[in-house]
Image (tube, rainbow, N blue to C red; front, side):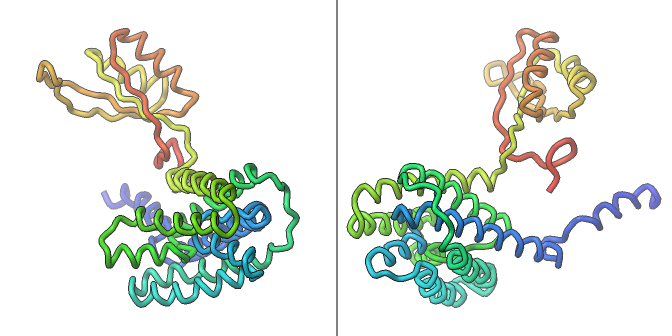
Length: 296
């Protein structure tokens, strides 16, 4: 019995610990890489087109336009006291995870401030700036980090007010965008709203994965035949779920199978060939981890 378990133990030992040295190194790389992508999008698209889409980055753009301050210095000037407040109020663990991003993002902004601007079209800039910033933030979140800024202030407000974090962030970003409409123009604030929306969608995409896998739920009176067809012809595993009919109260089995986008047509053909009356529901799976799919 012990010999049979040895491969499994070796495999478990090879997994990166949640807070081991390898995981910490990976998190550090992800946070720095994400901050670098954010800085590039910020300097190439948002700054030259005056798109202040919320956060400390948006405030730094307004400070540049109104007072001539370098955005990187404004970000440092705001991030440092916010980091200290987060460390004291939210706890040591959150402060440590925010420190690297809070320092490196302004550094990369300063480093890439002279890069050539690819477009002067504000609509393109708001879209691609939002994509770049959202991609960077998503990567930072994958590294279990934060770039600090108004997110820390939002969490402090949440702690003392009891409001939802998303609402606190929305109020702070909204205040920056309203300020942009006053300092710059109403048109700039509208482009900032577009960029902010794209950023949020991109963060969700990065956090939940880019996969195109599908989950199919199959209800049929011929589940055993469908199971054999999927296992042999499609070469995919499946799970049998116990269910009860809402109208008849009869016990029945629901098959759940995860397949790739290119396997959907084959799956539907297989099910239809066995039972033309089968009830099939297919939904998106944003990220699938396990054998035959992505491994973490």
